[in-house]
Length: 154
Image (cartoon, rainbow, N blue to C red; front, top):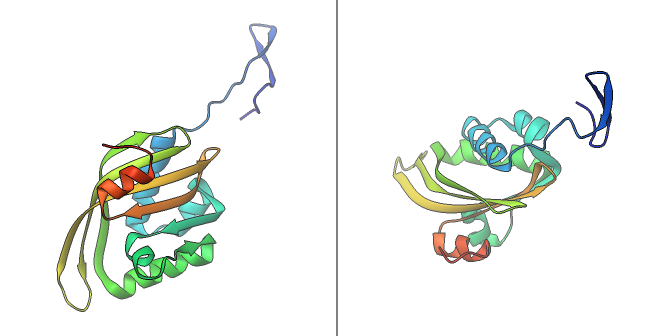
């Protein structure tokens, strides 16, 4: 991969044109969702997120306004999830490219570990990008609130 503005030989001539394209943010968002469902922390930080990645799950934000930061924080999130959920999956239904953000609309499905109670909850998530990597993910269980946070009405 060559940096933007690199001189490239084409047919014996040099041209000053980028030979790479930035990654599609919706594709990165889809891959991040897949990594979440596999609890693949290594893959997230190797390919998709910035080292200072911040994650604000809806339930954690509602309880104490907090979230998880950096690799250590995401590893704690994975441990917390395994401790409290028999299963928990993010099932996206729609991705919207908003420029430097991607809006995800979908459902969270799972089953509590201790209670066995099934969960099926609509959500809206906003992935904020720095370049082609995610630096923040905010999740809302109220879709209207998530849409407002993304600057949209529907």
